[in-house]
Image (cartoon, rainbow, N blue to C red; front, side):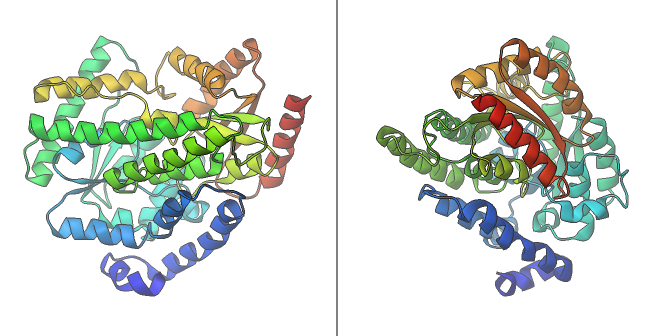
Amino acid sequence: MSDTYREMWRELNMDLEKHDVFLGTLPVAFGEVFLRQENRPAGMAYFDNALAEAHGGRIQEILAGKKAGRMVAGTFCVFAPEELIFAVDGISIGLCGGAQFTVPTGEQVLPRNLCPLIKSAMGFKLDRICPYFQAVDFLIGETTCDGKKKTWEILNEYVPTYVMELPQKKGTADLTLWEGEIHRLKEEIEHRSGREITADRLASGIKMANARRDALARLYRARWADPVPISGKDALLISQLAFFDDPERFTAQVNSLCDELEDRIARGEGVARKGAPRILVTGTPMALPYWKLHHLVETSGAVIVGEETCTGTRYFAGRVAEDGRTVEEQVKDLARRLTAINCACFTPNKERVEDILRLVRDARADGVIYFSLQFCQPFGVEGRLVERALQEAGVPVLRLESDYSEEDVAQLKTRIEAFLEMIAS
């Protein structure tokens, strides 16, 4: 791939030497984590190729769209209303931020005691090894935590960054605030794209985003079967790629894969033995290419049957009503999705606890791993309330904190194996 796309990367002003080093590590990691799995669904071939072309063919598509006049917007969070971007035929892409490789560069401008996701994202931009960062017209940030809120001010020195103020509660006044923020973003997108967001266009954008949410929800329901027809690692990879791929093509491929998974369920075919320990993961997002926790759990004899994370159920939570007749009504519908996403940035946040308990029942999970990235204060602090609620419900729970490095792999594996032994006993 390096030779095929090298001129494209050069025109994007990427650091080719550093980019080569970064990409050089991924095939080995991908082969170790994914390709050694037995009995993978045939439909995973599309997603394997989508990952392989994430810095190549997909960027080529985006640049072709940009050349044709399409706006390219980068996002960091599930709260970004992508429907507005779709409404102007724009391209919405998630930004890189799940690798240890760029953390040291991020720490050159950010405090070391900041979560690795933020430092990694900043490092990708400063290192100039993420073609998405290089291709975007502007970024949409949000105020889900103090670290991100202040980072956007620094990132804005390198790439235009528009910030949405996200409410921290879910009352009437908060919905009004969020509705106003969506209106202001709508004006920004209209200005940057040169296209008016009409009711018809926004209706199309809402349907496109809902269709993707429906497909991902279907995928997650398939994971409730025993034996489970797809590994947690593969499901995580699909969720991560949802932020990058063309939404209509991605939705079609996920639905095609679900057809295959539902056939597997009917035949009683799975990727792990029937009765294998079933784990639900909850906590912080796992941005591409972070696969450490899932790999450790699933090479220890268990299967992950769901993720209550921003790269899991929170990504497709909150279907937006499709019957809004005016832009005003549609923006209200977009704002209401706020109440369906139970991010730890909200206070109080009892709906998240209820959501996790419901997922434990639906997925028939034997235990929960509460995973928090280092220095992620909202999810780290909220872990105490979730842990207590799970214990009161009689659900085994293991709390883990980690980063993107490999330094704690042995320690994590020991704790995970001990947790699985406890569940089995």
